Image (cartoon, rainbow, N blue to C red; front, side, top):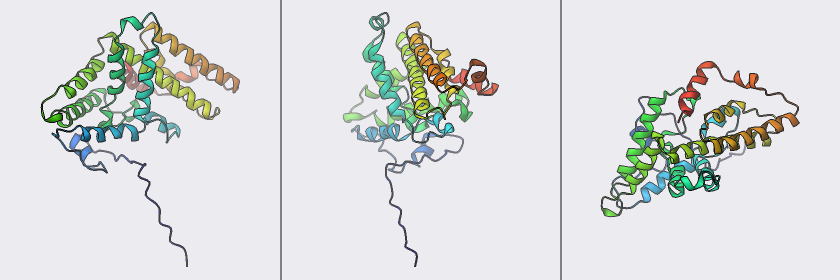
Amino acid sequence: MAAIVIEKLDPSIVIAPKIPDPWTVDKVLATIPTGKPIEGSSSPVPYFHTLERLKTTKRAGWKRFGINQGESIADHMFRMSLMTMAAPPSLAPRRDLDKCIKMCLIHDMAESLVGDLTPADRVPKTEKNRRESIAMDYITQQLLGNVHGVVTNVGEDIRDIWQEHEDSKTLESHFVQDIDKVELLLQMVEYEKRGEGKVNLSEFTYVATKVSLPEIKAWAEEILKEREEFWVRKKLVHGEAEEESDAPSDMKKMQDNYYDG
């Protein structure tokens, strides 16, 4: 008689189901395994629980290359926040460090509900912005609007910093957006090196062209040089012509849309 194998549930694995169009926050909330968060609470605990989704949601772009257990959204934002502290002397005195650290930790908060959308998802930038704006309204108003029993400015402060990042008009927002891109480049090279030359992530080198501040451009160039030296050692050719052909022209347009600002 064959033995019956009972698979043990692994509570660390969180599968995010695809949300049918039109996307709404309510549809997402209905799929949360731990249950819909309590809204209008005087306690921030429901908000704290929602933040866990940033820890369990993987950054999606890597999955197309077989990297299924890659960094989470929270991993990405945490390294970004530490990177802001190392701003070059020519830039450091001009930026508000506290705001930059907060912006790093807040800028992808909407992805706790929206998920990590990438150009490959073919979701128009306007629709991505709509979803993220609605998600931030829900988090900052429904989960934080009545914290401690009174109307506080906790949610409002978070929403304002998120919006400043989206509007892309201040030095802090430009700095954090550049840090965002450089953190991606770092992760790209780290995955390629651990892949020992079997994983080519050249598609992501494109974001280096969207770094705006000269000081951070220098970091991006250093990382790309490091990457080039790695591939030369592996005796593989990944020149500009090949990298330009890695993504179809319509994908390039989507990348332009997503990475501008």
